Image (cartoon, rainbow, N blue to C red; front, side, top):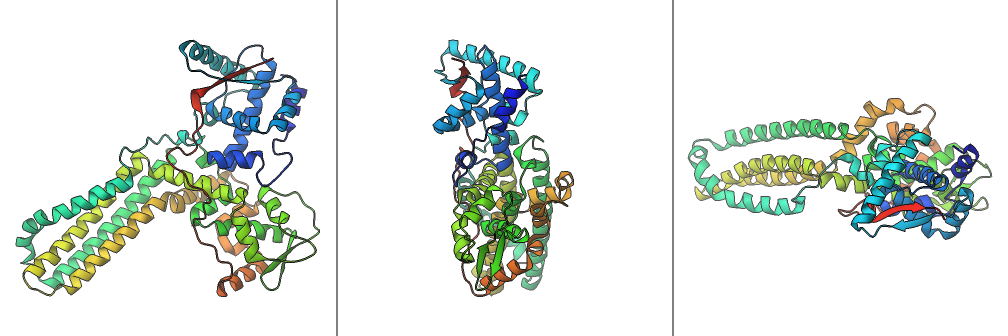
Length: 456
C-alpha cells in the first residue's frame, strides 16, 4: 500500500465546504441511510477509489459504493479535486447489461475482492455483499400489503357473522347476561395480555436475528431517541440542550436562546443550530425549533428511521404476526357482536354488550396500530438498553445519557424553558415529523446497472 496516498485519500473531506445540504447529508437523505451507515459507505468508497487509482486492471464497486460514487460525480469540483488526490482521473463506466460485459464485470468484482483483501483485509459484509442498506435485514417482502389484508379481513369478519350466529346462538341463550359480560371481559383481557407477551417475544427474536453487521446495531443516540418517541422535536431539544451544557448556547428569558462566544468543535446538528443563532441578540426558541425540524440533518434522522419501520412492517415475517393478531382480535369482536345480534333478535337489553363490543373494536384498532410501531418504539430501544449499550461509551457521551434517561439529563435552565413553552402552548411540534416518505424502494441503489471503473 502507498501509505502517503492512502492517508491523503482518507483525509479528503467530501463535506468541504460544510453546508446545510452537504455531500454526506444529501447522500443519506436520498437513500434513507443512517448516519453511521453513510459514514461507513463513504469510507468504503474511498478504499475502492484507492484500488481503482493503484490497480492496472478493472475494478468494480458494490451497489452501495456505486451509490456514493454516483453522488460524488454530481459534486463536480469535489470529484475533480479528489481525483487529483488519487493521482488519476477515474472514469465511471456504466454497464450496458449485455452478456459479454456481465462476465467482464463479474471477473472485475472477483479481482476487486482479492485486491481489497490484500490491501485492507476482509470486506465489510454490510457494504459489499448487498445493494442497499436494508438488504442486510433479510426480510422478504410480503405478497399481501397490510392495507389489502385489512380490507379482506374486515369483509371476512362481516361475512362470518351469519354462520357465527347460527353456531353460537344455542349456547348464548343458556348464558345469563352478567355472566357472559364478565366472562368475555376476562377472556378478552387474557387474550390481549397473551398477545402482548407473544408479540414482544417474536419482535425481539426477529430483530436479534438480523445480521450483526446490519445498520440496526450501529445507530446513533438521536436515531434511537426518534425511534422511541417518533417525535423529532425531542431530538432537537436534545441537540440544543447539549450545546447549553457545553456553554455554547445561553438560555434567556421569554423562550429565547442566544449564541455565546465559546468556540468548540461541533457536530453536523450543532453547526446547523449555531448557524441560526447570533451572539448579539437572542432568538425565540419555538421559532428556532420549527426551523430546525426541517433542516436535512434532523429530518434525515426521521427519514431513515421511518424507512426502517416501514420496510420492517412490509416484510413477510411481520405480516404473519400481524395476521395472527388480527385473527385473535377479530374472534373477540365476533363473539361479542354475535351476542348483540342474539340479544336483539330475542328482544333482550343489549346496551352493555353493545358498549363492550364497541370498546373491543376501538381497543383492537389501537392495539394493531401500536403493533406496527412497536419494533421502533419498544423492541430496538430495549435491545440497546439491555445489550448493545454495554459496548458504547455511555459514561462519556451526553447523547447516550439522553437516550437512557430522557429529559432528566437536559440542562435545568433549558428544561424550564421547554416546560414554560408547553404550558403556554407556544411553538408545539407534532410527532412523526419524518420530513420524508418511503415507499417499497427505500434505500435501493442502482445495483448491477453500474459496472466498474478504469484508469485513463
